[in-house]
Structure formats: C-alpha cells, structure tokens
Image (cartoon, rainbow, N blue to C red; front, side, top):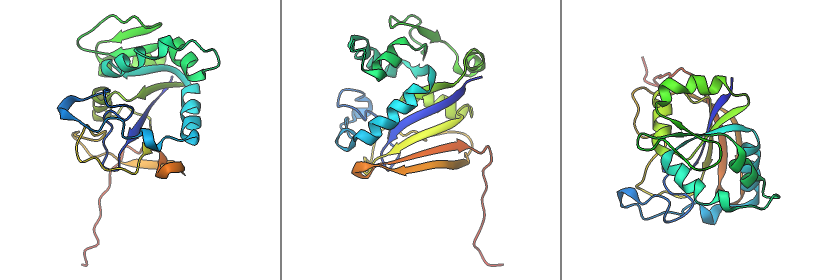
Length: 204
C-alpha cells in the first residue's frame, strides 16, 4: 500500500494560495500570488526533485491539475527529471465538475474519502498531493494524510487560503525532520500522531 504524503509551500501565517505566480489563484481577491518565488533556492529545488522521485502517483485537485497540465506536457527535454516524472506518472484528479482529463495517465476521482483506500492499495511507494487546497481540506478532515512536507517561508500574507483552515477535531503532529534552507526558508516533515493532548501550568 502506498503512503499518502502532502507537500505544500506555506507563509508564516499558514497561507498556501498561489505561491508560484500572480495568476495561479486570484480567488477571494488574492493579490499576493508568487510570494514564494523570491525565496526559491537550489537546495529547495533538490528537495523537490527528491520528493518527486519517490512518487508512484499523484493525487491532485482540479485547480492544481489545470496549473500543472498547462505547463509540464510542453516540456520535452529528457534531462528535465521533474517533467519526465510528472508527464509519465499516474495522476488521480479529484473533481466534482469534470470527469475527463487529457494529460497522460490522468484519472478522475469522484469521491476521495470513499476511493482513496482502493487507490493506495493498487500502488507502492508514495501517493503524493501537491498544492490542491480543497482536496487538502478533505484529506485533513478525514485524517487520511500519512506525512506532511511543509516549506515555511519568511513572509506573512494576512489573507489567503490556509492549509489548516477549518476541521472538526485538533490534530497532533510529530516532527520527524527539519532543515534550514537558503533565503530564510525551513523545511519540516511531520507525521500525524492521531493523538492530541492539552495540559496546564496552573498552580494547584
């Protein structure tokens, strides 16, 4: 069975919306698209390449599918490993509004909570989620993510779609890896503990 991992670029205040460009996602009058680009570095690129190299398939939302499929199929350079991986991997696209997709090996997923176990059972390695805000909310709510890979950038945006925005029960996370990168970025890897604890410093 594959492990379900989620990789996301986040501001310090948890925003994941439109990190790569001003036109990625302008919903909610979001005006700060492209906020992560000035902080990109070769070491971040190396980590992303390593992450993609572990993928057996992608699970992505329709919006992220539209962004990726508008660019990567036209990248034909055989030395571009990310393009080779993305263009050949199976891609499972969660969508309530579309059921057919033109990108090679793209498959429709109509009901993520119902279908995810069957998808994981047909794969080994990793089933990877990248971006995909709406899909991420469903996966978090249903406790379906096995590992979070979060790049934290030294910016606070004040508005925008947040990875951890609204869910019914608190989540405990265990930090299993952390690394400081160039440009003030940190890379943190977490696994859910399926246990949330509280305490008190109050004196008896």
